[in-house]
Image 1 (tube, rainbow, N blue to C red):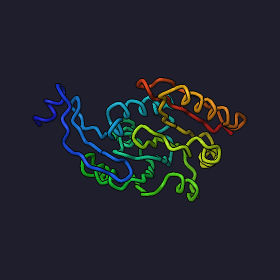
Image 2: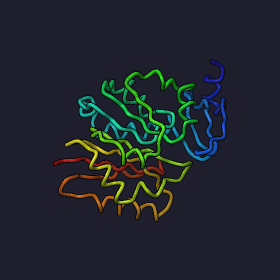
Image 3: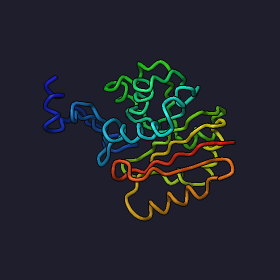
Image 4: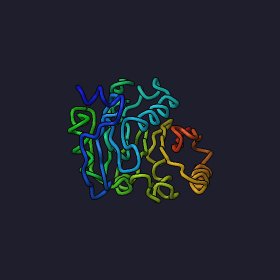
Length: 221
């Protein structure tokens, strides 16, 4: 494909749409691969895929392969799902929760998300879903952004406690956060400090791809 070849020289935008939830959504050929972006940041594939792949590698691919059910809060184009299925060869169930139905339509059209049989997509608000679900999960991936902003509820103790409650024993949380200023550093340190150290271990992987910091929580009891 000519567009793919030329994308190694300059990014080539092939789709752009206004979304009520995500403002501007763009699909672009960049360095030989399709990426999904908002107006100011990468939503799927590209740098985001590298960030979450690093987090999954830190948890350990052999550990992930033994899991039965993974929950993804914030699907976008589904790059982390492709990492799980295509690279890690994960065979268990994946539930993806995404509030923006426009993004899922684009993910199906350009990234073949609807062809992944073990994937269930639920169009819902992540906060509401977490309150309603009766399932427990081996891994919960949190990757929720509105362009470059993160909703405040992600860092509220009620939400983090509910997320931790939904973990099976020896389950993990992989939380992708964005650090743009010192206030965000303080926010993340406060978040970590409020995790119950008797039941969970937690660590930060700072400055992954410049502005991203990963938080990994493991339920040990």
